[in-house]
Image 1 (tube, rainbow, N blue to C red):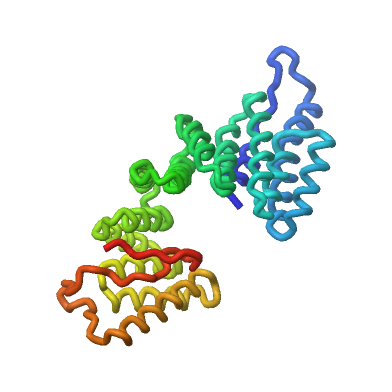
Image 2 (image 1 turned 90 degrees about the vertical axis):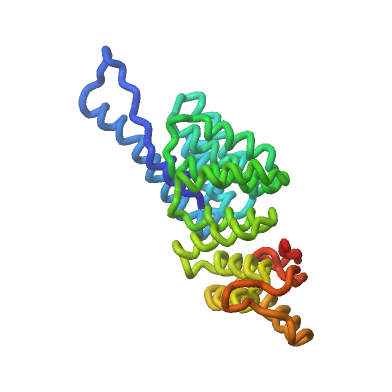
Length: 303
């Protein structure tokens, strides 16, 4: 679940009070309590969505019919997102964004970022880039949100095979969120796929400095090492990924790579490993290793 949904719930817009017709104290307090009540109801809906997405969707529908509002659409969107119905979530968040724009609500930009996230997951990378670009044009968004949106837009650029666009966004995201291991992981993966293994190594080293237990980071460290023919390092990184994600998709992909590496070395026992001084004897990395944590596609690491 996106932290932007929680932020939208907590960022309750204060009620507009006419400076001439100031209401009595009790109605004013009641008016002020309504946004807080809606925020609490939204947070409850988000919590329900994590365990029962359909219940959250039903709650959002009831809420929308009763009195509508931005929070009702965010509630519905959170349910669809938890159910991995990306189109349904994008549509609900888009309705919430449109309502926020019409009401000049400051949450509009953050909600649009959620629209972009759902479009990206639904396969509409071009639409996601369009919405992320609109979000990034807002000078008021916080660095945390800007950095995360840049990382998401980089993913969209990768989907469209625009490596330069993705690289530019990730470099900007690194500057904004230097302690975010996920951004360094994305940067390392992109650099490896572009064939820049030295830069990929620097990026994955930074990711490992920040988190030595994330199986995705360990898995990518193995990918980069195998691209450099550093078989011992690859074996160690993939073994740690298996331990960090036993039975999970990344752990399973890492185990398959370990099995292939063992078979490769058994078939050619003279194959060189990393020398003590870090030099490599061979130029070409072995083929057939899983390139991502899903194990769904096999790719040759860049040589």
